[in-house]
Length: 135
Image (cartoon, rainbow, N blue to C red):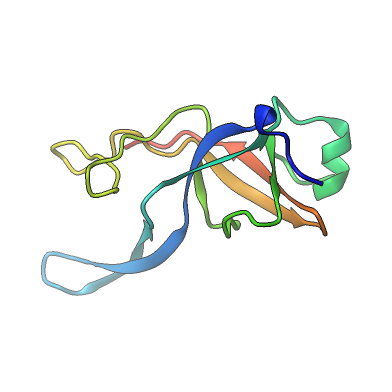
């Protein structure tokens, strides 16, 4: 089953890269980590308008999510650690990284996270939830 191009919408995704240990002003480890993501990339897929009862059974009754992205099996390796820009586009610099302001905060933080990925023989469905992230 192939996806119809006219039903596809552009969204951006950033895959998990690594976590970096944070240190205090003396160079000691604080025990906390900063999550680092790869540069955002654009992709086109079928994105649902909102969740509905049919899709709820696909991911389990207790899983709470807002939208579903349906892609072909040759899609990028999106998993539960990936962040997404669905309702807005990220500001990307000339080097491909996210644009930050003077204080180092991202100008356009992600607006969705992946809740669950369901792979089948012909497609991949991704349940996503809206989040509010400060830069």
